[in-house]
Amino acid sequence: MAENKFLATTKGKLVISCQALANEPLHSSFIMARMARAAKEAGAAAIRCNSVVDIQAIQDETHLPIIGLDKVDYPDSPVYITPTMKEMRGVAATGAEVVACDVTGQPRPNGEKLADIVKQMRAEFPDTLLMADTDCLASVKIANELGFDIIGTTMHGYTPATEGLDLSANDFAYLKDVLKMAEHPVIAEGKVDTPEKMRRCLELGCHAVVVGGAITRPLQIAQNFVAAIPD
Ligand SMILES: CC(=O)N[C@H](C=O)[C@@H](O)[C@H](O)[C@H](O)COP(=O)(O)O
Image (cartoon, rainbow, N blue to C red):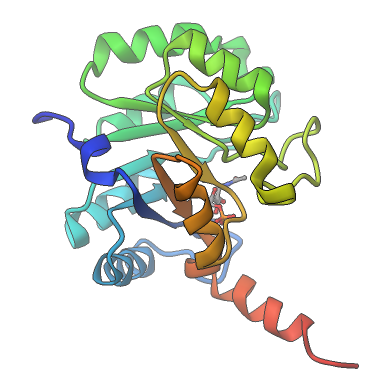
């Protein structure tokens, strides 16, 4: 990879997540690439996306910097965001500027250890940035200790330890704690579902904000409208 300019390109900006899993109506690399094209036309500085095929389609369509991940379910672990070295390597090999993976302290598949994965990634892909998808402050500490380049709040509310929590609660009280503790740039991600919330995350000092479903998941958007129909 030429010099990795991801952090410079995304400072103070919006990153749009374009993802649709196999069980979602828009599951298709073609459709995700078109979503990403719309995101680019709107002014997104980068795209976050899932799976090697989607990453490649979106790179071809947009030439925007990518936060890549690969969601895979393994029977022996609750970790599903780029859980093993195999998926880390596959995503990095696409040339994605950033590879994101779960950093929640939960056991990984096949007994793999996150510290070993980070070490191996640094050896094989020294120019690729690593983003920690954390859920709580203990995980932010792990991300600090392992030297992740970017700390994301992606998993806050999605692990047994944080179930039901919402990043924006009490004027982003948890995010403020993350910003205090993180030793590397923080990207706010997860349920940032209005322009006002995005703006607040940037005002608080986040490096960038990832917005997904509120922009790129029409089923979710439509459900919110339908739920608001009076009885
Ligand atoms: C928890 C988990 O698996 N999050 C995933 C991570 O890549 C995506 O499904 C989310 O859409 C993404 O984090 C953006 O969040 P939101 O769609 O809430 O703006």
